[in-house]
Length: 238
Ligand SMILES: [Zn+2]
Image 1 (spheres, rainbow, N blue to C red):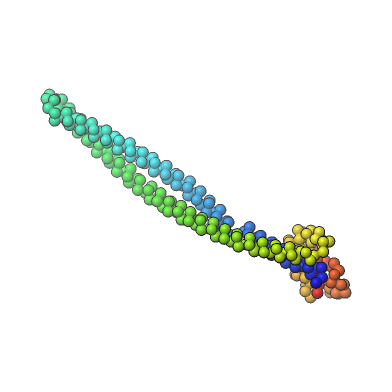
Image 2 (image 1 turned 90 degrees about the horizontal axis):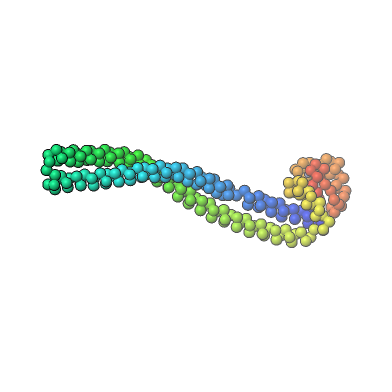
């Protein structure tokens, strides 16, 4: 195996590491998890608004109920007085009866208002129920995606560990003086520093070399350093 062949083996492992790292960083579950988080936040904000509206309606209803209770108490007191026999003056009795009738009318009006509030509450309650169901669905999806993400991350990390171990073993066969240029070319050329020359085609850039250049290279020993005239990558020849 020429020294370039040994470096090409390392390149193969490095390319695999780059691909796995890219997959790890761009797992669609990660993006979906962010989307679900955004949807939950939007839903919670909307639910808070609807909850506030529900709270207003409940407080209004409570106020009306309290008022009915207090008016009923007043009417009961007045009736008790009316039938107690303590009041005998006809004018006072009439005033008491008028008062009771007026309180009962007022109670009737308030009860109509209570019905209106109950009608207004129905769609608000329905919306809250629907928002709650959507929140549960998003929570379930979030948990599902989180579990899937953890599973894929663990699988890719396992593959990465294995490839890195193979890479470390392969790197032992590469002469020390090749690393500096390899690292430089890798950072300059999208991660690929060295490629095989197949026929007259560089497998790094997939461009054909000129006949003159191919002829020149063929006459060199496989150990000689050769760069692709098109992309600048190191070339491995058989
Ligand atoms: Zn090339």
